[in-house]
Length: 278
Length: 185
Image 1 (cartoon, rainbow over the protein chains, first blue to last red):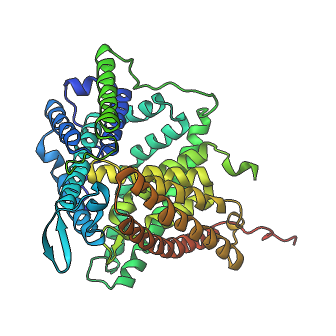
Image 2 (cartoon, rainbow over the protein chains, first blue to last red):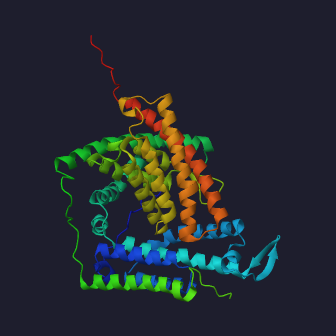
Image 3 (spheres, chains in turn cyan, blue):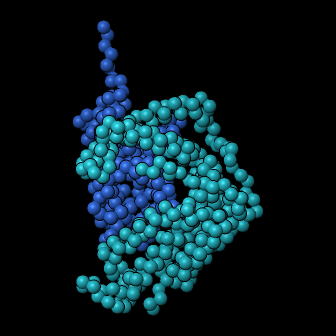
């Protein structure tokens, strides 16, 4: 387990994107993600990808910050591509309605439609990732809860998210301590152990972790109750910011991009897919 | 039941800390399975445990926040269809809230059965219905693939929720004072 893993390795910098308020970034992230999730037009998707890479440069995100995530994403995308081909080699033909086979392997015909579908899908998933990374790496974690509340999430739920972010490092440290303590007692937790033993041994870490957390829940909720938490219908946030002109600009641009994506699908492609085969 | 959805400070705190544990277990404490992109997740045992103690709202939020956060940390962005399905599973697990006698220090035969029936229904709905349908609607994945993944995930999550959730609840019941355990001398 990587003990150095930092949650939301937020880097403080003074760029256009860092200056935007948390609410703006959350709304823009959701609007743009929705646009990419909705569209299956490779032109729109590639455009969005270029835009998000430019934004990433603007936010001064270094490659070393995102390297690990990129590795995970690539592994995920490649497995997804391989298994979705084996499960449904004719999915592209079904979607685009034509069949241009160019080769045959073990009785499965390889079609341009399938290649096009899978390439589109690859970039579709890949292009959401930079957007999420920009959001995570440029939003101050303590501002996150207030932004959730700002977009209309009930403040109690938003506060639960704030607690999660606050206590994740603590829980991680507890977990690590228990893990080492159990190993010192001779518990085999690596892949050398048998499948059933690993299952059983993981439980021997989870149980102490849960029970120490239940005690902690008691302490924290008493402290919050004593300070009058949830007595009123609304609450204010120490970190919330007023929307500036730049925020409005960013919101308008994102909304226009979403509308543009939907418009391309409705008026030009007449479906969520861009079909070059007709 | 009216107070099934009651939310007090303790529910909020339990949700926050439960989601932190869920995130951690979801990332690090899983046993890989032969089917790609699925694994035995110990995290669902924990979400079922918290849902049984604190209700459906806590259950749904723990699984939703926990899954979204661990996806975000690992992949940079949440895989929404499965995150929503996780939330649904946590919500249904929460229906076991106040249906068992675990708070009175008893978790045997009938209680174990109630808990497991609810968790099997919850996992089945979440992974065989919600997750694949959302995958098809949002991401247009091939149906045969997502249903195979969904059924595998359902079976594995039922096993891990059943084993881990039940054991945690038995352990928890042992720490509670039994009802009527004091007798007049």
